[in-house]
Image (tube, rainbow, N blue to C red; front, side):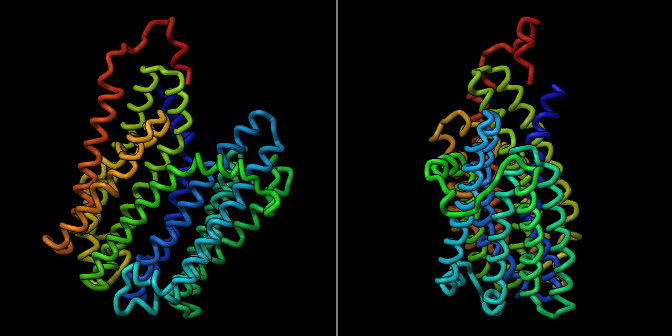
Amino acid sequence: MNRLYSKILALSAPTIFGLIIQAMYQVLNAYFVGFLGVSELATVNLTYPLTFVLIALGQSIGIGTAAITSRSIGRNDLAHAHAAASSGLMLGILAGGTYLGVMFWKFDLVARIMGTVPGTEACFYRYGRLILVAFLLVLANTIFGFIARSQGGTLFSMVTLIIAFALNALFDPIFIFWMDLGIRGAACATLLAQIPAVGAYIWYFSSNKSRIRIRPTLRAVNRHVCAAILSIGIPTFMAFVINVLAVVLVNRQAAAFGAEAVAGIGIALRLYTVSTLPVMGLANGVQSLIGACVVDTDPAKIKALLSALLKIGTGYGACASLLFLIFSRPLAALFSTEAAVTTILSGSLAIYMGFFAMVPVQLIAMIFEQSKGNARLAMYVSFARQGIYLIPLLLVLPGRFGINGIAASQLLSDLTAGLSCVMILWRQVFAATDATPTGPENSHRWDW
């Protein structure tokens, strides 16, 4: 069983690490921008859904591309691996570029939809466009990273991520304060920190360290490969998009209570979202392992794997919930010195994290249903927490309970979606009557 836990962590660690680093760019910007004032901090929160779409594109296309390139390398079909990697990178750049084009074309409308309030409009225009360009490079680096890991370049990918993040942390105070660029400096820092990472990946895929050669041209795009990439990555993208829509609605509801509410609730939601990413990485990282168990139709293996995942996930969720409840006030003080903001932030964070241990259950159930090919249940589980339950609650509770109703909506959504997923997994897996094999004749079934 220890081998099972080791394999789970080995498969999921790169995805967990990549997701956390990408989300932390905006948390890092929020930390430094918090010293500028409430309007600037609120602006970073308002742009978060826009950048999260680019993260979603990078993750979904990256997952699909890596799946195809790794299988091609396993068959020793390097020509197909080259085509898949080139198609995946260009698909990401074209999708991200199209998204940026639409955003820039209707930026006034985007600002209104995001819920800008008096005092944040000017900041939104100074910061919004530039941070979107920066995250287009983040998207490219995400896909580069998935391709590198698909051929065993995990260490190089992690080092590149760390260097880019460290440069961002170094550049933020320089551009924001020393060069006196304010909130625009935070976007400049993120943009400039990504350029060396792009250069590092270009060198890597051109060197003898890589078996894959990438040709970033339109002629290298293979339509059939792109379709295969999208078929693998779309479930992940849809899960991200539901999160984005929920964040937009939260921001719009918070805007009714002023810039302080947008800033405080936005940071609380950001920390909550970042906390979900390790579990999302855990579930996505072991999807191939879950799929193999489902294909083998081995109930004992499926039970053992899901039990291990649920123990890891809920254990992490309970610890995260407890830590955020205990340290909500010190955490709030890191992001703002405004009393109104820190009060809203700490209170909202404590409510957000109340039933956080239920979130891993939902994410693990989602990957399990996707691996089984159960489209209807997979769709329900994907949309339950941030769509089916959260959105109606957000439309009702803030009007009745004020600002605390926003965080309470997430609390009740986590509980309801989590309990429904517990019932699904119990009926499909844990209530099954299949006996767990224990004899030596079945020992090969535990060879993970």
